[in-house]
Amino acid sequence: MAVNGLTEADVVFLRELVLRRSAIVIDESKDYLIETRLEKLARDLNYANLGTLVADVRRDSGTITRQLIEALTTHETLFFRDVRPFDALKREILPPMIAARQASRQLTIWSAACSTGQEIFSVAMLLREQFPEVVNWPVRLYATDISGQVIERAAQGRFQQLEVNRGLPAAMLVKYFERDGVDWKIKDDIRRMVRFEQLNLLHNWPADLRPDIVLLRNVLIYFSVATKKELLTRVRHVLRPGGALMLGSAETTLGIDDSWERAPDSVTPWYRLPRSGP
Amino acid sequence: MKAIVIDDSRAIRILLKRILVAQGFEVFEAGDGRQAIDELEKTGCIDLALVDWNMPVMTGYEFIVEIRARAEFAAMSIMMVTTESETSQVQLALDAGANEYIMKPFTDDVLKEKLMLLGLSQD
Image (cartoon, rainbow over all chains, first blue to last red):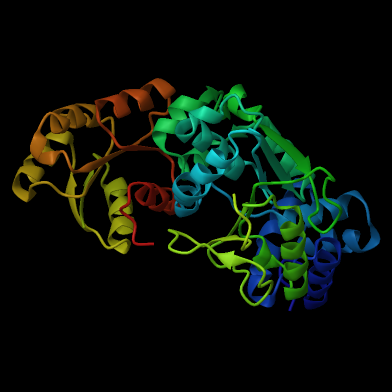
């Protein structure tokens, strides 16, 4: 049955298109995402309904298709999402890692699907608050997302009021943000800590990418098992010895890539490679 | 867990109460800061106060200052929920002893996420 001009065949076409272009699986339980996200795109592009938008996408492999993929593959984010992963960074992961890297003074943290930047900016603020000793290190915070639009927004470090309401402690709001009209802007010294780049995780990664910590949270859930396996293998190959991998609370390496071990007694699941000292 | 919702708007009190009840709180209500202090003197120290800034009789800011001067309520978390959104206002509330701050308008998720920050969430 057609919904807002969208037929079953359109939905199947969109699922296949997204799978082909981004390897993201939109299963049937997520069909509502297709409708809600495309409604906004259709409005922005002045389409009367979703059916005419999809008809144009079927004819076009360029701009509209790219915008449609971006609309369907961007995901919710908020500052200090789920809280506990940031506790794990603060108490379990960063202290031994920083101690072990006193000589090299190198630390690279990669937010692999950073959306509008809240996750990596949370890490930047956490470093400032809890680890002042690394202020003068050449810390590399690298943030990537499949969507160019999202990366552009993230790089500006500008957030709406609703966004800074979400998950951000008020004490950090007043310390690290300033009002900019009706929006809030993260201060330049924090913004400059992060390098943002558009990156499809299925394509080549930068040759010099050697992260100590990889934040791949709420990403694997959108991929097939084969793609999950491929991604975890690639992370394993680039991760520095003693490094850490953080996944979303509904994700695991178990049964997909058993080279990883779950950190014992952690406040939240995070993963590392055995027999590699810090 | 117990909370008090302090706002002169009945609609806002109903909205906040609904979210808190769903999170497992027993909820008391007050229409201004003075009423809230009267209520708290009966209940004793509870887990959380959500307080608006601009109210008749006693503002939310005055409420925070008075409550933070009383040691028996030291363990109570206070969250300001207000339309005041200037950095200086947020700072003023924090300096007075607020633990968290929500700028209206907000969604259910905003409140739940702030409860999580305060360690008061069941999620």
